[in-house]
Amino acid sequence: MIDTSSQTIVIVGAGPAGLLLAQYLLRRGYRVEIYDRRPDPRQIAPDEQRSFPISLQYRGRRALQGIPGLEKAIAAYGVMCRGTYVHRQGKARRIPRQHPILTVDRNRLVLVLLEQLVARYPDPARLSLTFDCPCQAVDSQAQTVSFEAEGQSVTVPYDRLIGADGARSTVRAALVANHGLNCQQTYVPDAYKSIFLARTNPQQGIELAPDFIHACNIGGDARILLAPQPGDQMHGAFIFNAKNSPFDGLKTTADVLDYFATHLPTFRPLLSKAEAEALLQRPTARLTTVTCDRFHQGDRILILGDAAHAVSPSIGQGCNSALQDVEWLNQLLDQHQDDWSQVLPQFSQQRVVEAHALRDLSDYSFPRSKALVLEFFLRLTVGRKLHQWFPQRFSPFVFDLVLDTDLSYSEVLHLSEGWINKVKRSRAAIASAPEVTSWGDSDDNEA
Ligand SMILES: Cc1cc2nc3c(=O)[nH]c(=O)nc-3n(C[C@H](O)[C@H](O)[C@H](O)COP(=O)(O)OP(=O)(O)OC[C@H]3O[C@@H](n4cnc5c(N)ncnc54)[C@H](O)[C@@H]3O)c2cc1C
Image (cartoon, rainbow, N blue to C red; front, side, top):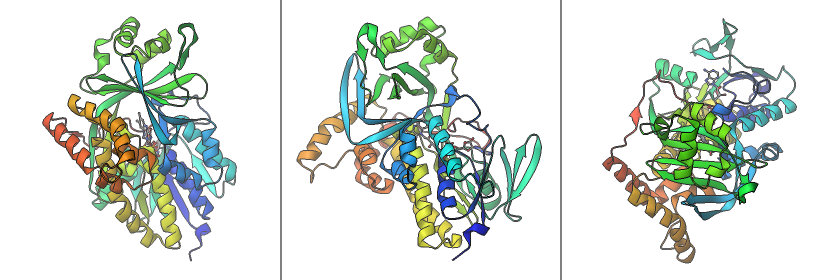
């Protein structure tokens, strides 16, 4: 049994994965140092441009529940949603979920994770946090990692190094450059803008359900997804094909308001003039996916979360799987009595297959051709009833398996192969193959 208290674990990235991991590792007795390139979120105003709601189901929530009190602290700033309303031409279809979904703003999630961490581990000898400090290089021979802090290069030693530094991970880049890690980074065809709407308009007698996600497909690959926030606000993402942005044709605030009146009539009374103006100015974010053939190097370096397997947010599993990575790592540390030489290869062996399955589910659960969109809604509604009546003949639809069960992603993929392959074929037909990006390309997955 190793003496964990003599080991320093450096975590690069204070996102959801890095912060939850710190809780688990500190509980095991390790010393933890966290470095993040952004400013301390406790000391700055929330950045609306980089904010979006995250929905957490079984997988992510169970990882939070492993630390007593943590999920409750997060839920205090989120909303438990019972399903989704899909709005179309003034009508709404209700798609309930068997299990509630915890929706919370991404920046708020990070802030609560951070505050909870510091409250539980106030001793700087056990936990140190450094912000405004981008990771620059890793020297695995010397077991050091370098950061830029106030214009100076700072080098720190590590016993173990965890890259939780998001889709553009520097730790991952070091493994690619120096250790032959195979990794492909591709653009998701979708781009998005954050959007903030009211949930009610008392003058017009409008009130959308406070405990449901609200969605609307606009056509031309554009859609809007809104999660209710505590109070009367909704917060979400306006998603569209990066090559066919509806915003290309919108030049003024009046254009935006008109666009909503025509294409999103349900949401027009909930869009203020100020938000229409802000939406026009808000930058468009593009997203990349990351696929690696392993997640570790030797017995000292690991990447997890988006750094290891960023996916399209289409089925809302990136954060769930990032948090699940942490729970999985903790279980392996239990099983192997903190012997990292066994834990890290096991982690790669077990999680890479899950990450690849999640990638397929994220890319191909949601159809893009008109004919399949119709079938998609039939499967979501009629198919669900058929499964209830004839469970032997009709298996649950992919979304129900992802959102209402804790089956592994590879099991979900196996059970949903028919649908996934159909969407894959239709994608090939409309030639929306993802573009491969180079290492230096900028993306915006990371909030
Ligand atoms: C519009 C949108 C909607 C989404 N909705 C959902 C959803 O509903 N459900 C869901 O599960 N997931 C969702 N996701 C995905 C989710 O946001 C990510 O999967 C999740 O944030 C990954 O967490 P992470 O900690 O691995 O990485 P990140 O959240 O990207 O955090 C990485 C951290 O590393 C830091 N960092 C980066 N580079 C460096 C460096 N060189 N040095 C030091 N620090 C660095 C960053 O500042 C950041 O704090 C959504 C994503 C988007 C874009």
